[in-house]
Length: 345
Image (cartoon, rainbow, N blue to C red; front, side):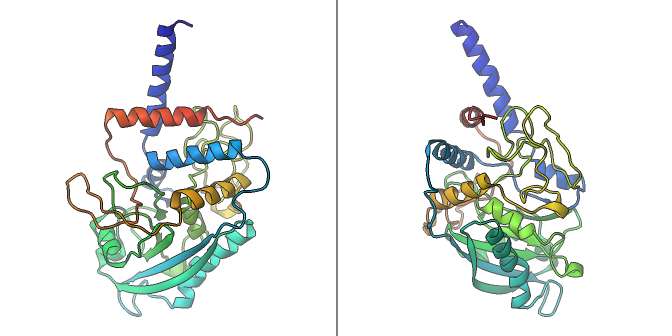
């Protein structure tokens, strides 16, 4: 192939990869269509993709016993109960709040053989107006809660339990790990929508699913079929074209190995969600040790309007933001590198 032809082929690959990364968030699209029990996580950031790329390199190069065995993996959890008033909607005893979050996460993570243990460090109650109790994602109310209640530090898991929101069926969200300096702020937390009629969440495993995101996992259907082998960038998770809410066997990516992983905790088939793959567990452990890094230092950032943001532990909310052309090329190159690491079937 001539140099010109190679350049044209590379350019086409970059444009395809850039378009893939810039597509609308799958989770947001599901929620907008009224799908039951969707989580509202944004698209993965450049920083998360960089961390995943490093994790894949380490997984490729390492042979032998798990280098992360014995690594400290106790997660300090700060529960923030947002209620209308004492004994009002959203209020709950400490034991109940612990049972539907920390106890469920500990049970499922232990069943899967992960080293993660979630420990309640503190619980607080916040009496909120209607707008804050039913807050929308990325709203001023969410930012205000963060400013007032967040316990900062990369390894601190802050969980905000809020009320439902009639505008969508989103059950919760958790922000991915990111690096400072991206002009984003007030992230690195989980938000869970409480359903008083169920005395919990629409799906009891919502906290487990969101904790998986907080530890760096993508949806099983994040990048769909084709352009990238394995839609969540983990080799033992079969690709899946889009979110599936039922448990009937399906194979939405017939040209790739494996049927849709409907029993995976990072999917949406709530009635049959049960497990993480070995690769997902390995990825969470690697990112816990490296990307979160055991640090508790905080960063001061500025947003697009040059307003000084509060310290946010180096982790910020993802979202749909414009980016300069140079960043898009960097993103595309990152995806090309990830897509080249294909599993041998």
